[in-house]
Length: 204
Length: 292
Image 1 (cartoon, rainbow over the protein chains, first blue to last red):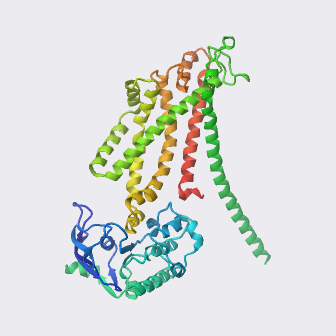
Image 2 (image 1 turned 120 degrees about the horizontal axis):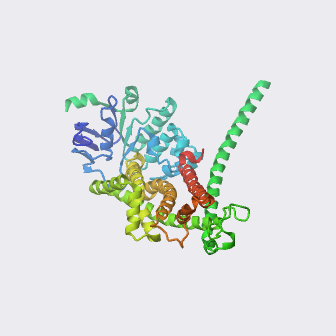
Image 3 (image 1 turned 180 degrees about the vertical axis):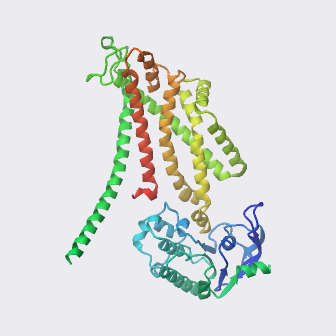
């Protein structure tokens, strides 16, 4: 179980709190939707949960232990802007294979074209880059996924395809997911449980 | 039907034209780079002719430019073209040494400040500000004088005054790339910090360093000429371009314009060559413009 316990965070001591005593837990196979307006701190919470940011108060635990500081992290994040999450100086192939060799079936499901692998990120569209970014973190060692507005700026086709693949993989491997979005219908479609940021913040 | 065909054919010819243009642009850039490197190489061979360039021939004193002596001759009958050539070559070598040391200092300080951060960063940033706020030429003259002038003086003073801007650029680049999503993700994918430095950070800095080094060259050469011109740089038996210009000044008022104008123009051309080289190198090294 991935658990955030009374997590607090702010970017510096003279800035306001973004998270204050926020708690959430995700069990394997569960897809939790985190719903809230823009700029309320959803992304910050996602980064804390994935270990990109250290909480100032409270703790994040994976099966009762803190996240590993080194080595492959079982909690992986998919970013909102794929063009910022792939090194612009690397070829697509190098970026895709950074952690592991994705199986051909996965590449096919995401309709990743082998011709892209020699190209550079600026030659591909955001939808294509996001599919690369998703394939990159679906290493067998991944147990929890945090999808931060993953498909917000993609067209409907790519959105549907990405979610189809991700839901399949998640069901197969019993992945736990946190889906961050301000798109309520999407969350209702893909999640098993929805947490409303505003309600949650009031009660804590 | 006919209309359709002609439309599609014009479309194709347009695509073809665009392709050709892309190709041409790339070839142009490469051509410019090769051209600059060649020219600078030719200039560099001038030091082999230093002995010939110093030969005096008193029967051919103060001749205006002609086919036999395109740059004319000076008051001792030395051929000014040869003198300029070997002078530029010497300046180039001095410039290379100074630019190399300077950019290495810049790289080291930029990397240290950005990776260690905190107090170390504040310390180095303060020094960068200090050096950038002091008048360039004054520090240069002071350092050249303190280190005893000559070749050492020029190299040391130029190296010690030109690192701040490159250090600042590299520091900023390291900070920027370290906070990038793809670098942070790399660590989460289990990559060691050494691997991240080797595959993410260094390739990001390398073009900046290279372009910085090339663009430092003309600075170094001009300052070498400047210091030598006012008399604390190289000595007269090492005829670098600064010495040639300084000596020519005494003869300008007597109407021997070619003694200063032509070597000066040659210096200008060389500096411009480096400038073109740096700019085009930057365009080729950046993946966003590399395929334009």
